[in-house]
Every structure is written in C-alpha cells, then in structure tokens.
Amino acid sequence: MIVLCDSAYASTENFQYVITRNKMDWKQFKISWYFCFAIAKTVKFADNKSLRDLCRHLKKGFYRKTFISGINTRRQRCYWTFSKTVQLRDVGEVTIVLSKIRRNCGPKNVKVIVTNLPNPSVKTVLKIYQKRFLIEVLFRELKSGMGLGKQQVTKNEKRIENSIGCSVIAYLLILKLQSKDIPKDKSWSIFALRENFRHRVYQSQAVHDYQLLEMKNAA
Image 1 (cartoon, rainbow, N blue to C red):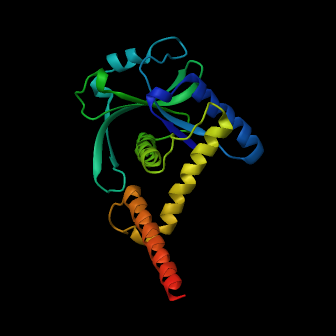
Image 2 (image 1 turned 90 degrees about the vertical axis):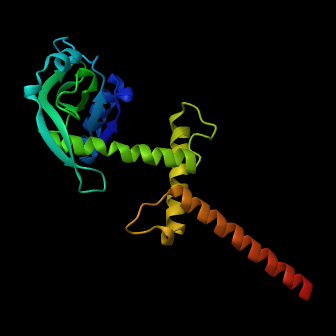
C-alpha cells in the first residue's frame, strides 16, 4: 500500500499515520504501508537544518537527467533530479528526490518528493508520484459527477466513509451499466457515461408509460 499526497497534506500526523498503520497491518495481515509525499521546503532534517537550504545551495552539477514515460503514453519526459537518504525530524529515515523540469531552474521551481520505500530508484519515485494525477481526476469525477461532498457529513469517520462509499458505488455502477459506451482505444468521461445512463432511464420510462397507456386504452 503506497499513500500519495501533495505538499498541502504532508503533515507530521499523516506521516505518523502511515508509519503506525504499517506496523499494525504488517503484524496482523503482512501488508506493508509506504508513503510517497511531496513536501514543503520548510520541513526540517533531524539536525534541524532546513530542506530549503539544501534546495538553495545544491549546485546544478549534482542534478542528473532522468527520463520517465508519461501516464498512458510512451512519450518520455525529462527531469533533472537529485536523490539522497536523509533523516527527517519526527519521521525518520527516508529518501528525498529533488526534481525540476530544466537544469537551470531556480530553487523555487524544485519539487521535493519524500518516500520511505526501501532503496527506491529515482525513476520509481517519479513514476509512483505522477500517478497522483489519476487520483485527482478520480476525485474530480466523484465530486462533479457522483455528488461526493454534497451529502450532509461531519468529521465522524464512519459518516465520511459512507459518503465516499456511496459515491464510489455509484461510479462503479455507471461503469458497469454503460460498459458498452467505453471505447477501448480512446479517452472517455464519466460525465458522458452518466448522461447516457440518464438518457436510457428516461427512454425506458417513456416506453413503459406508453405501453401502460396502450394497455389501458385497449381495455
């Protein structure tokens, strides 16, 4: 299990949650939990030095070209990266990957990704982290297409689980019922599938009402 998140959600609590969950689930189910988070440059190392200082003073000669294929495409994208094993305060030993699009980009344009995966390569970390984009797409579809977030929920964990569960079930139901409308080699949208399903329901209801009317007239 690998948890992904952007820097806005890479709090100490979330780090600790994954670490604690890993210990619990490995002991009970032999399931490992890892994280692959983008983090803010304000994060401190165990020696209290700032990550911002590393980004600011690391010479561009330490960066190396790294090519990875994009999502759902073989087209290669180039990143300039630097990787190092470090100790983060309140987190422990992790691997950090500094990444930027161009070699001459300044410190402000450096993205920092941190993971506790064992001995990960830079390519592995970048490939895993870019999958976060698919999660963003899914949440957008669940929110806009399936009504996630419109229910009356609180901070109660069970209610939140039920809210997300209802939206996911609706999403999967649409995929199942409209599977014939999903092209194999082209992009598709849950919004189009939803509208097609809605049209089917209206059409079926109209046919049903017409048949009832004919039966009534015939009687």
